[in-house]
Image: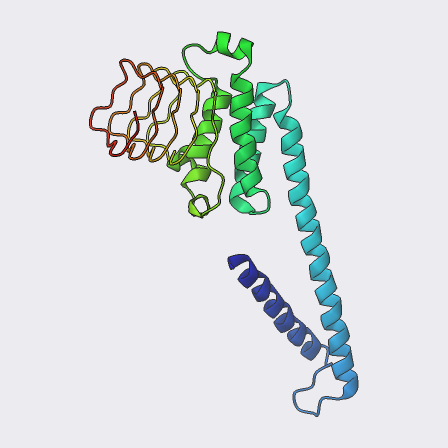
Length: 244
């Protein structure tokens, strides 16, 4: 709706500019009767401006597509800095444009699952996630980072839930994140911190949550069946109707 109103405002602005230009060059004389010639000239100018605007709009769409494709290519880079940069580009693109928004949140979750499943990654990051992975989690779930799942568009019915199933998230930082309905099915969340997190209806089925910190978390309706949560801290957490 907002996008349509913005387009209509552009059209109105073009018409106003056209009238000013036509009057300035005496195509429209406010003191004399408007002739068929002046009307024809005005229509030609309007048509010209319309196609000029359409061309600019198509170029803008092409730029969005180019940004998306370039970021996807960088996400497959062997360089950590390039992949992290790609995550930032996709995050900003999702905030700005709805065209790729749902696809982007799925891509970023898939990136976390894929990268953390690598044997070398798990050997190297036994104590904490890499900067690349933690950054991706922040841009997905943390409000102060303008996380995608903290935005109004993520609350609309049908928006894809975050899927971190089987991800390696040992000691990951989910403090005060928006993880409602997220899938942590089979994920390794040992010693991860969910302090103050919004985890309503999140699915931790068969997850490894030993030593995880859920202090003050909102876990109403969350699903912990078959999860391993020895020494996990649920102090002051809200877990009404949660399944254990």
